[in-house]
Image (cartoon, rainbow, N blue to C red; front, side, top):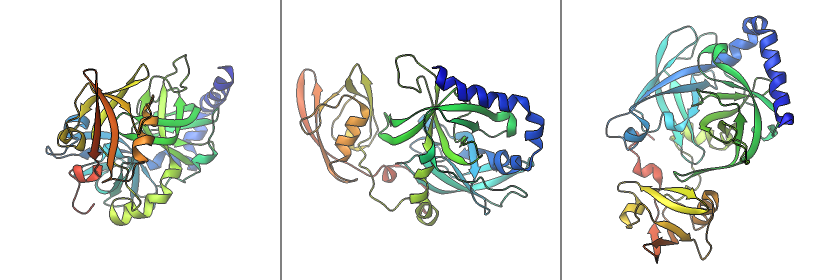
Length: 330
């Protein structure tokens, strides 16, 4: 991995060689100043309260002059509101604007725009490729920023029925990844922090790292999220089952209470045997096969293996947003 470590070494050298000059530059105000601490508050009755918590903390990124904040969706989904801490130390209320499950992005808006802080310039994640040096910036100023490098651009599939076709995988891992800003060498935003993972390369030798949502996913849905709190395009079908890949086989490890899978009788321990006659070996193969059957509301057909017997399923899917307890305005 010498080729992968070289950009990281160069970027580390740049950071270590001249931190005072960098910290005093006007560019800092428009970069790290726009990366702020976000705390959200979730009602007890929220569907995600038990799994994600009632108080969540991470990073929000200022992306316009009105106080619009971009973050990762799981920090703010089902939240009644939140608060954002400005670089000058003030804490102000932030309201929920919109949430998109397909991309994993969320928007909030500060009650007032921060004084003297420039929104973070948005770059092009399509230009980011493996081996590129990047900077991961979480709330807390320059001390909370760290150099990294891109180790892969590939699909990420999460067991909660979530998939990104061209996720950005970086290493080394940043400990405060939730909503963190991924910056290119020009200081422009190219990704939003989503996860910490054990193996960012996908190779045989594990390399811990982070997964980022590419910023290019924001532009097609931004206006819809601001106006309606959700995207206007077709919604992926949702079944409400958590699936894990174990040695090339896919097992249901949890079903969401009152979700379509539970209502259809799917149980923990069921194995996904086939979708339309073909056995999926990975989560992304499973999701692509299921989602190809239609948008939310479509009846999804697949086979389960339970106690040595194959059960044919036809499960009416749903829109995951309708299951969540979101604000009525969303």
